[in-house]
Image: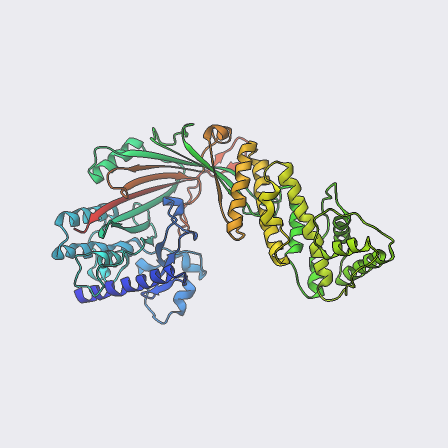
Length: 583
């Protein structure tokens, strides 16, 4: 028995270490399969993290979960599925997203492994604390012995225990990122996650074991003093500290009708404070607050749809005429001071429907310039080919231009770029949010045309963020200016990313009208004391905080003020942990 367990711990640790080493080199792999029906994925820092809604976790972690159905069917190992490992969500034969493992399989090996670590130096009291914690929380009894072999968190714990010197692992052991296992909530407490995180100073000193439970109901009953007392008792503390957190959803884009998909625009307000006086306490004005803005271009309720349509055209620089025919669009708002090239862009976009139309239009203009029939006026600073020809026509001599291939498309692209740049300059300077010096990176003509289009796309996203904030938050100019500078700084150094969340610190007093009469989308209290990593977290939210469970919703409806029926379901989370020292 013991050689098999030792070998399993060695192999599991080495496989995790390989993934971790490759991640540090910038190599991002697909999840790997463990024991035929489990997959392990390393989530890098900055990647979407399934734990963020619960623990604000945004660092490197290992996630273990049930292998999706289609992968399990194609694996070469066929295994009869026992009742405990059956997942009801798979009855349809469809992949329903992240899948959970039975609670027992995620945690049971931990009990046995730490029982026999006593024989190689782990203090008995640590075993007692550990086993009491897991048995009390999960109410596990009469566990089959074979069930412990080669499973999950226990192997992770065993491999990192410095007392396990007999394992064929290089010592000192490299500390791996935390390991989290999706659980199916099949126990009475509704356990949805189990986690293990190492305690390190100069070496690995111990491990923190986390349990996360989640339930959905129309009511909730919890007392802050009870939570504090429970934390004190569990961790043998006399004094604890409390910290509150509330998140308010100020704006979330929704579909206007069945034919128009919603953009992913959200604006939230995060507020934190300490100490906490009671459950669901309203944040005091002495709190720390920040606006979070994630804006997707093309918000249907925003006023920038005309610019978005123009920008879409600029993103096509194809060689074939068919692509041009599909890309030419119309209906653009006219700025008051349009010069000849900008008016041409506006008129051509409303009348040109094919590549041949594009060629005919530019041919007519060039011929009129050559004959001196027109002497159009232009804004200064344009570097387009058409502007160059117009300036040459003032002196009676013009270069010969062959309107074939991509040249007509490039000419249209250049005048469109010039127009959009002037549109953006007009807004930012007119609103006193940025100077020409601030905008230089985005409007410079000194880079190739593809890069110019890309930078204008970044500038358009900044404009979308500011306009969304102005429409739905109505902030003071001081805050808008700070947001503008923050966005400009970010996009000078980073690629375009419409999923990026821009965060702006604010004073609660400046935005109190936005949240004081509202209910938070999420409210939580964190209780801590003693060791930094040891904490208890209770959270209430109006949406499911985990994505691998389908919660049963009680058959209860409430009549809202406008007479419509609406289900009111609350989701509660409880995070508890225990710390075990290896020495």
